[in-house]
Image (cartoon, helix red, strand yellow):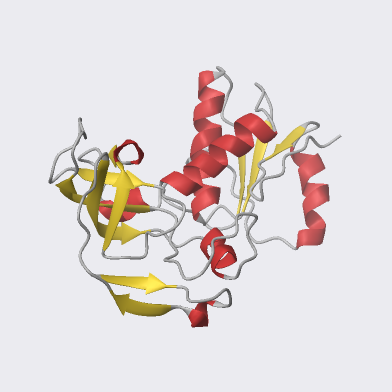
Amino acid sequence: MRCVVCPEWGPPEVLVVEDREPLAPSEGRVVVDVGAAGVNYVDGLIVGGQYQIKIPAPFTPGSELAGTISAVGAGVTGLAEGDRVLAMPGFGAFAEQVSLPAEQAVVIPDELDLARAATFTQSYCTAVFALTRRTRVEPGEWVLVLGAGGGVGLAAIDVARDTLRELGSAMRLGVYGGRGPTVPRRAPRLGPLAFERLPLLVFELANSLLVAPIEGLGRRAA
């Protein structure tokens, strides 16, 4: 079983690939054959020792994955060999196999392939947390998504759109950046803009603007 190992904190160049013994299930855990793993900005921070949670080296990075359960430990219920699951273990995903507590493994619906499932959790959890905890979308407000071509940006569009729909509000999304498959057709695409022009454009769009907090910060413009 091959895995990526971070022998010491540093740039990505410190990472090496090592061979390890195949994993066996222990009580309450499942072994997952990894089919895909998400690569996120936070993974680079963890490898560099720059994240708030310091993982002692050596360790295997990789914070989210999707794959197929190949072995089930004693006491595990609701999961079986062959189940397709996703998980966000925090680290350890950059390997051919991982051992997970059974409660961390979430069964993937048939319409979601492993590659998309592996990159689903962090982006959408970040967007949900930003738009429901750091700030709150209200009916009639705009949501301006900066950098709408990346994972979190596209997730922010989906989350904002669904939140506004639940609130019974008309969909009002300003999109700055690339257009992805989940960008609503009715969303006005702002296109390439000089950053210094953005505040003026914001005030032209609406008197009250809710900024989608892609970096985890939310605020209401006065």
